[in-house]
Image (tube, rainbow, N blue to C red; front, side, top):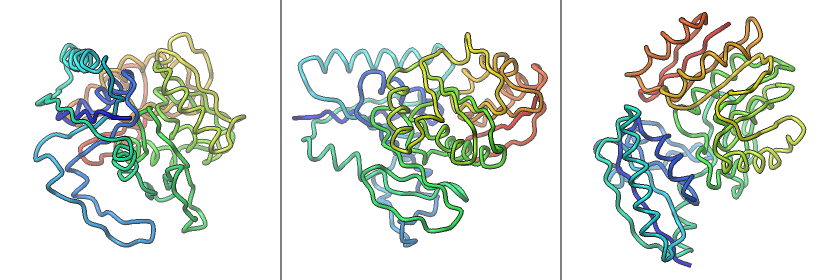
Length: 311
């Protein structure tokens, strides 16, 4: 079988929105080529450094690579993807160059291209993300392992917004907490919350592919009785008293979530937000404080912002 590798050269702000669009059109995996990776110290699972090829990274913005089965319907699908990405401008999302290119790859090449970008990686003080096709042994007593296969859902756990969310969960989750994960993606944050002691996590996502991926990863980590994921538009219609709500989505969407997050949090509960670009940090803070939240902590990684607020 032949596959199409679709490359989208865009702005960092549009990363998650475009990744979601690609997934909705049936992408079998999304790879992010971000020049910020060149600035981070990279190590393999044995602690040895390895070099990244600078020539494969853009000088500005980022590149998202997605893989689609090639058939007679591909030209129409590509046109529809272009149209959906252009519509992001209506939501004041910077899509940068928005250059799209496509090339044909053989199935065995696609398999290698996709998996070579995803290796076991220690992403926080405690969490290591391990792809399901890799063998890995714990390197430390307090290390927590999340086994993941992102499939068609966005989220391998190595993106700065996810790392910031994981760090915030490490600092806030207590034994037997009830957690809501809004925009559950591939389920990484839900799994992490359980590993930290949460009694139950309820995950919500508008994308049925994300819900399916969360179920698969939940089962892979043997957490069938601790994580419930379902299709939903943010927290609309949800009425649960949670100790923590975590949401790693775009700032424009986060501001629409604030009111429902307040209603679903117990007094003293924490609202963890991530996926915020620096330019929109104050917009989210203003909305949180307007609703009555107290800003506890703001963290930054590679120009992405995470905010922890308390009710």
